[in-house]
Image (cartoon, rainbow, N blue to C red):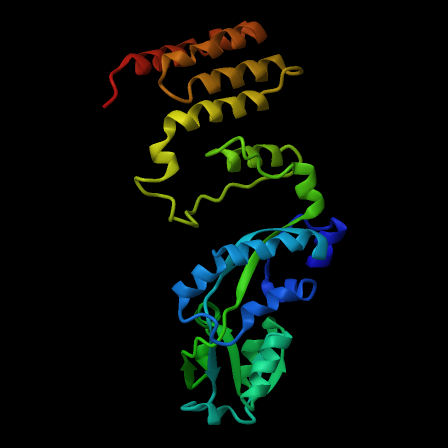
Length: 295
């Protein structure tokens, strides 16, 4: 996938840091055994200034731009037999992700590490092709590797982070984030991206850490709304389909029950009066809502 992003065949991807470290070896440091005490500690490592600074080398080293990190969990050991101590790993044929730091770790503890792609792992554990596997807790549960095992050892022995990447070419064309648009820079980025790319909405809430009463969205509406309007004004085409443009101005006007937004009505009238007349009832309802006291 990394090569596809370099050639322009792929715009964005969420890859394991292991794959990235083949081009930027510094990232292999994340796989130091027992670097993180627990999930919370791992998260603090990935959010640290040091980790964020490491992303700066990616455009030159790999032709991609790093947006940030993620992680499915710490690595655990799933085995067909009993594992009570490190001695029980001696000579154990153990599936690993094909990556040198993981290979070195299991060689050091005396196991027989066996690189194997993920699609082959379930059957390999089921038929005894391997005695154990190295896997994060999330996939152990989701892909039901425990069905073919006697032991799930919560060893937490290694981080296995991911990194969000964008092709450097795509990032250059999009222009990146505009720091002058504080609070709406992500929205601006999406609006610019939709000009050249098809964006799809995901109805599910994927991250809820921003949904609280102290978020920027909740506390800085007076700053956000004018910037939000400015971005939408920029996106309304100034030439071409007059009917569509007039409808866009009316839609922008009715986004919020605020009579100051009547400033958009003349723009719609200038472009296509009939669109305004056809929407007279909707405009009337919006005016009444704008005049009503806030609950």
